[in-house]
Amino acid sequence: MTRIMDRSSGDEERGGPGEGAHVRDVLEIVVGSGAEPPLGDLTDAAVAGGRRVRRRRGAALLAGVATALLVAVSATAALRQAEPGPVGPARPTQSPTSVEPTPRPAGPVVPPTDEVVPSSNPQEPQDVTNGSR
Amino acid sequence: MREAAREREFREFAEARQRHLRRSAYLLCGDWHEAQDLTQTTLMKLYAAWGRVRRDGNVEAYARTILTRTFIDQHRRRGWREEAVDRVPELPEGQGPEPELRMVMRAALMALPPRYRAVLVLRFWEDWSVEQTAQALRISTGTVKSQSARGLAHLRRLIEREVGEVRGR
Image (cartoon, rainbow over all chains, first blue to last red):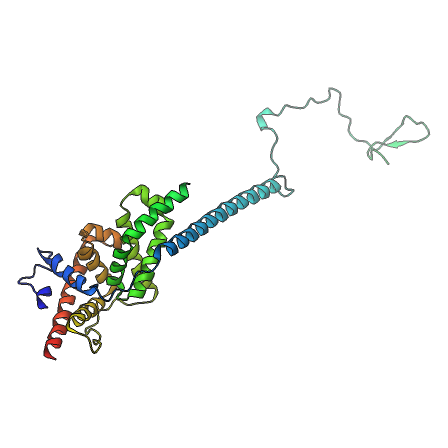
């Protein structure tokens, strides 16, 4: 019995020759015949379980893709909605360099006066400063 | 059709290897019922990844790796602390000399921390190299060597003590 773990030197700790054989003897004795119960039907159960695992993985993958798509679509819609918003900063439609100067009227600018000018309707006088009544 | 071929291949492998897998599982956990569950879980995970495993090759090594990792994960989840015990459990009464020897060896093996046990089983039962064992257990080769040496020393001490006690009875 002691032969199993006997050693003449410290070879076994250092991975010397014969270490594997001695430990294997011990392990052979532990699983030795007689105590081993009959093997049940492992394969059918393993196949059924494996299928279930694959189905769950597939469903999880599908759910992940669907969630990602939903998030992407929602984000796009939100961005589109936010773009023409009233609180957004006004953007110049043209660059300053491309602004063409508007032609000024060639005639003399008439300063506003308080005097009443005759309107087209001679019955009704018009106030120039007010523009309209 | 493809699914049927896949299943047939897996069944061939499982039928051929499940006995050896369960014996390895027993060496890890020390209980035949637990070994049966461990083997079934291993085969289930193997079938779930069968296509990829077949493509990568070395199905055998992959199955052993799943078995050992599943065993270690289960122990970790249960909150098992890796502390070696100084004494092995009492032997059951009324056993003959051969079963008694087996019980001594089994008790000594089970007294080792699960990780040490896993290293010893992979190195000396499966005949894996230090590198293969390190890869399967996701530890360094240095750790494999040190755990192997400590495991062996502890196993020897426990067996010598128990054998001495059995002889003294």
